[in-house]
Length: 310
Image 1: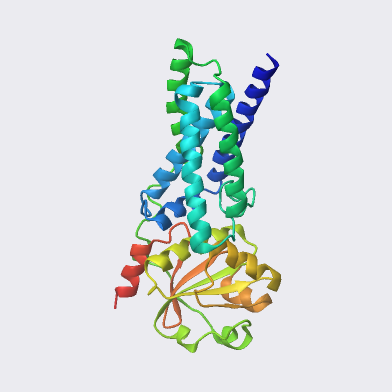
Image 2: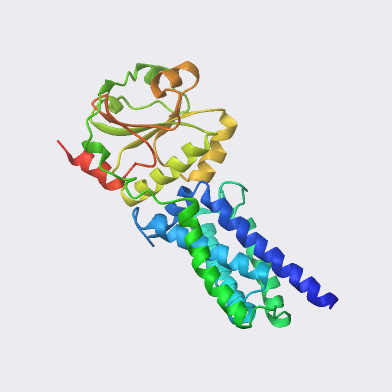
């Protein structure tokens, strides 16, 4: 009896980890969505659906482990396969990008490097395999079967209810009339540190993004632009960053955007150009801001169409 209680508590603990992982990915959900675009599994339109379905799967595994539903028949196998896939992703991440930045296993709530996450997953795999061998749970009867079926539909729909997809998020904002304004870049050329911005920023088309190193929304925006840059290196991004020097390395470790041209601009000079709302993303043509774009609405095809337009 004591052994059964211990194994039941272990199962509930594993379930709690899956539930916490699912919930923390929901707010904000964009970094998790961008992962699937980066991997080539989905595009900007399908990634929000893929992300929510996988979060729903984590909710299902977590709930089933806690309530002991269909453990040996379905839940253990599903959770072990999920963890093995996560481990494979983390190993590839370490190989190709190094052990830096936040792996995103617990969203932006709990920072964890890829190696830390891999160790955590290996420990969970060991516990789940132990449970698979010695603990059957109770949810294999007729009632457990129907409760599991209800849980499947509830868990998979929950992310869509808690954080609905805005189907019009990538509407053609570039076709909307906007008031153009001149971006006075003289202060950027004379006051920037870290590197001197090229004078060509005042010529032709550029996407100039003003971001704070400690702003969580700026990091989300930067990760999206990182993926766009990987998919099309010809997109002329330029970052103007604000913050303390010690925050620069963590920013780049998390966003992997060291190769995108950037500089630092501090104090009132930064606020004068960027405004007070971060991130500020400007589509600039010959020094004139033609469009100020919210990072949620930033759409690669629309940007490429704007760049191609004479």
